[in-house]
Image (cartoon, rainbow, N blue to C red; front, side, top):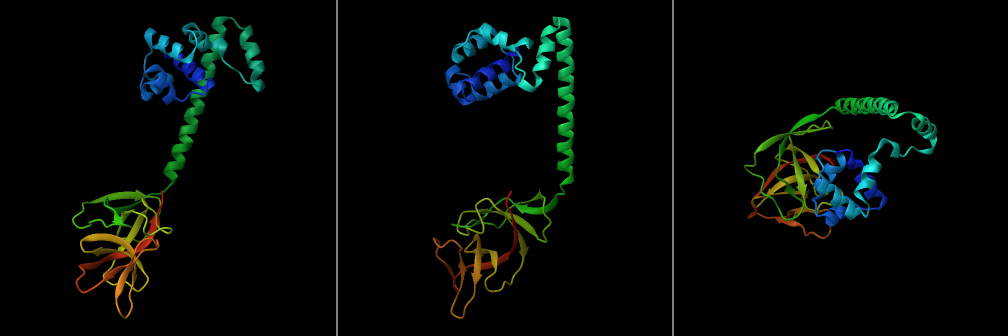
Length: 244
């Protein structure tokens, strides 16, 4: 019965229906429809009747569409269809078996090439704190458990953390990963990660004669003054970013 999955998919696409829309028409879940179409879940007689009614065709139509003779060969391969039609059913089966073997070999070759490309990409391991530095309202960073992350870039950094918020746009976006070199002393104008009253922020440090402050690249955010009363600590300098 699984061969009917392609028939259902073919009719659904011909009627310009998404799996989501067909789910609404049949009452099946979308993942159930996907499994039926891909042959990962068995179809029973009741399922076939529901699909046929929802697609506006007869159950027999779905069966007929699944037969080898109903395969739609494109114009460049019309000669293949002609030869196929001239064969008796036993020989047609042999042709289909050979074609399926060639298809499977091609898929294996393509998968092997994909794996070879993936293996060629060198990955580098970093300490990773799965707790974002805020480009906005602040995030607490202390006592966060360190993990390991692998990325396809080689950066001289002590650890990596994600960014949360938009206060450092357009240079840094929500979800970016930033590479940090720990430091206790940063120069004027450097972008870093700072502990400000218990929360971790990614900001640009400005130091002038009157008062130092943390600056956001996004003009919608106000500067954060650093006063003698501020619980302030430099965590490190942002030396690079990764946007996957």
